[in-house]
Figure 1: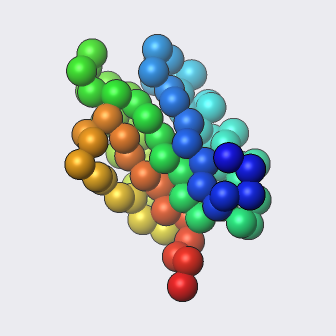
Figure 2 (figure 1 turned 90 degrees about the vertical axis):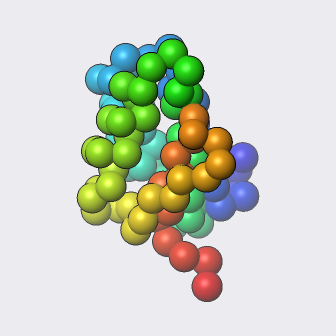
Length: 83
C-alpha cells in the first residue's frame, strides 16, 4: 500500500529467525510517511511468532507503542502518532 501510511506484512509460515529478519528489514526501510506496521503472525498453529513479535518489538527504538486488536493473529507497531 504505497503512500497509505501503513504497511501490512504477513509472516505466516516463517520461523522466528526469518520473521524477525523480515520485520527488521521492513522497519529499516520504512519511510517517514509510514506511521504503522500491521504484522500478521497468526495464532492457530502456535504462538511462537506472536510471542516473538510482542517481545522483540515492544522496546524497539522505532516503535512508539504496540497495539493489540480484536484479531489475536495481528500485532500493530505504531511508529508515530498522526496528530
